[in-house]
Amino acid sequence: MQSFAFHLDFVSPYAFLAFEHLPVVLEGVSHAADYRPLLLGAVFRQYGHSGPHGIAPKYDWVLRQSAWLARAHGIGFRMPAQHPFDPLPLLRLALACSQDGSISRHVAGSIFRHVWQGEGGDANDGGRLAALAAALCPALDPAGPEVKALLRANTAAAVEKGVFGVPTFVVGTDVLWGFDALPMLRERLLQNP
Image 1 (tube, rainbow, N blue to C red):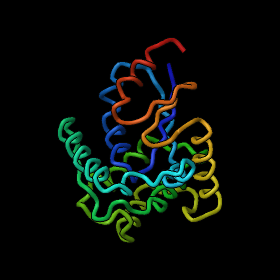
Image 2 (spheres, rainbow, N blue to C red):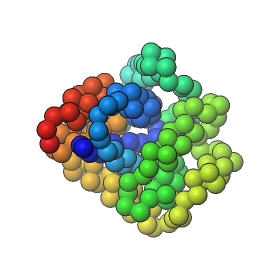
Image 3 (cartoon, rainbow, N blue to C red):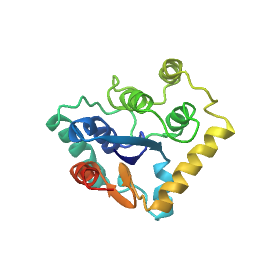
Image 4 (spheres, helix red, strand yellow):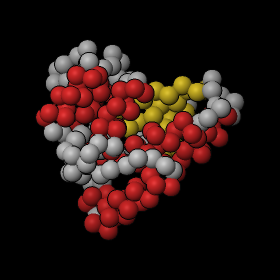
């Protein structure tokens, strides 16, 4: 069985689409995914990049392509009321359900769907966040120092591996970036370690 790290930030529509499409792409492949939340804005700052929202035509393309990819792959998709939004509350909630910086597929999916398959509401709405937290039952305080340290460590470790965006899949020393890298991930996992 091959294992890989899936680096993600809930603000990214491409990370959501890759997360949802992953089981289809990896059907029949024995694998273990290690879901690792990171702060995409901090990764961008490491490289002096502002993200796609900083370039209006690029951001328009991201929105159009994300919606098209969702339709093309049969993935329910609805833009949140505000985008981009501050992902910190969601990242911290996810990591409050962790001991080591890795989160379960259930936690990742619950938060991704809260953002991208909700009723188009504000991803950081207090009532919605409280309901999500109640459903996930975090063991740690999302605002506590342990959670903040996990997020900083995940982000720093990802940058050290060469991660420059999300979704990024790391298999051994191979770094594969983007939704369109899913077929490459499948091929890599089918190779001998």
